[in-house]
Length: 475
Image: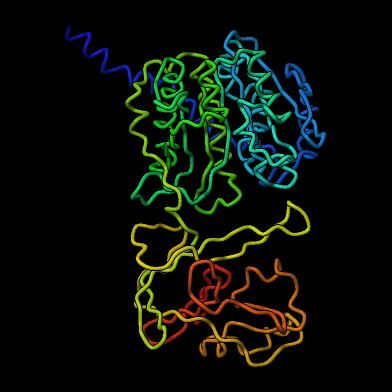
């Protein structure tokens, strides 16, 4: 009995030894990163040449068309009996995993780099089918829904859209044993609550009924996720969360589970200084490949479901882009101690590939349990809406001729310009540049975007907040 108990206690450690590929994949990602996709807003026209140039043993086929007639491709590789299906960008503005899939293609083509044992395990034991961009029309406009306005992840039952019909038909054709449902979520999720950690990756083994029952199909997905969490804690400690497991009867992940495909939802969230999600792309690369290794070898079988249940749920709205902590604000002759939280939205111009940031106040008051990517700590600061410079200048280039230091110390951080340039060109400036007759927000309240002056306790201006972005004022 003593030997048996010792053996059982060792099982989790055996599983850890079998998942050591994760760190090697994580650290080796740069060798496989496809530089042709270097930001989030790539389009169908950029993806298709990459897919159609894939050589054997990849099997590349056009599987169908979107509502607007854009081609949707499937890419298959491997000769194993276990069928794995990955679909990405069913929401057009969720591209992180699509980029990671292109990196995986490069990885699977490489050789003699220390990963051949892993490749052999995958390609011998698995047949892997990728749908790298299920919603190319949504990707074209960088929007969630397809050209009909349908959320494809709510079309698993009716199958109104050609994209949903295609996904279902491929799943049925190969009778997928495993599925990867690959998404992006808001960068404002926290990994639990309360927490100081953002949810960089969130996972889910979706429920297949309202009772959230667990059968062997769903449990396998839970075990893979629990094993992944062990590895990820070595790289993004505290930043892994679990997505809500509320059953959605129209969703693909939930129905894939019901149809017998053990499905893993991966949501790519936020990470400090990674607005373009290129590090999260690297994490996707290591996560997907190490998961498939577990599927190929069965190493996940030693992992206990309880480990999955200990992963904290993510919490939406727990993070902001910027928080000013405990600043004093004077309003109608009275002083108030406030926390002020700003978020930055993306505003497109010219086409969906180009954008600039527009700030807005998300919340005001006691935000003690909120967190932000950037925080101005409490230090007896006072805050006020910036004043406007009394003279209209001719053009943006004239502003450096002004006595900027004296202007800022007087609380002036708004300048009217006859030719102010485009909003994109002035969105990141440390002062607010507006047109001759243009209005700007002059109140501190949720939804507004006021230019702010932040003074220290001696009255010296130390910071400006322009368009929701914090700028330090040089001494």
